[in-house]
Image 1: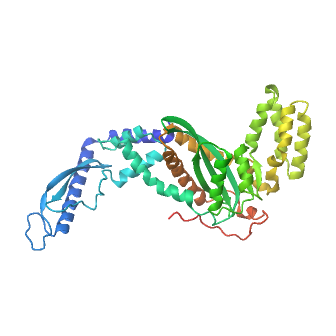
Image 2: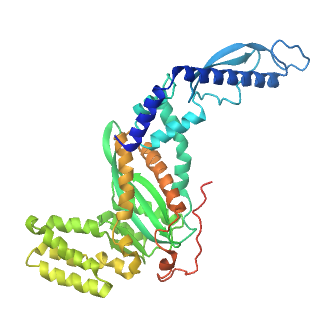
Length: 410
């Protein structure tokens, strides 16, 4: 059980244990107040109070119809007035909506934090709404999130240069044509010239092939992404080909963590610890010249011990040491995909609760909603991910660039 589910369960238990007399009183008070406002609105609408005879009357009352309104104080029974001619529905209640805005916020929050539909239903009942909430209602509620997600995915990216771009993918299970299939959720984040990060985009596809990555990266470029000096990712063949096609003029940094895993798979099991220690000596060198010299030295030491590893290391020299062409203060942030990997772990923690998504739209809705929140936190962070002064040391970046806000989400 996740931290969020535990907190929601605790909230449910507390609410269930609340004094029933108090809950009933609150429901009764709310029902009386709402009914009085409904009747007052009807009087203003037709121009006459109940039993009043006036020349300005526009319509006549014709009884009431029952309506159950679900609120955080419990289910409330209301009576909606009917007219002999025409129709009336109070403005304080939105048509065809039986759950008020406060409760909708609870449900959407529960959904975004990874709570299953069944647990959402239990939470709603614990809030005093005995009628619960159906799966279709949860889905309808959560579609309201789509607008913010769409803004995140389609907003312009030309408000600042994005010097570094991190790319990665994670996989989720989706039901499609009566089968459960694996889908790739690809994510891009970037470092602005002022040192703050942003989420650049998110999409879902069948696989991480070159065509899909080209479409995704082409969309980023089409929205104004520019000024990129380095792209950091793993060495997936389709991704690398797409990067070289769409980011011509930018360097590519092969994630050293993924590279190390690849080399360890080729290493003799008994020698892995020694080989790993040898390779790590490359990354403690102070500049490109010494790092390159150390890499060649390690290759020579590995040839008799693990020739396959030596060949792999030698072949990835250029891409593994791309980070050395940038300020030393940035190295730990750009020599691996760790910044976006941490983001992916958070997404997996939430998506694992759902297990199997009903369709691709629901994946984008949940993942996108989480990324909207993460993006806001990145932009509003008090500390820059990398100082603007050190970013200005990179060739082609204006040193007097002022901090600009993210593109408007209005």
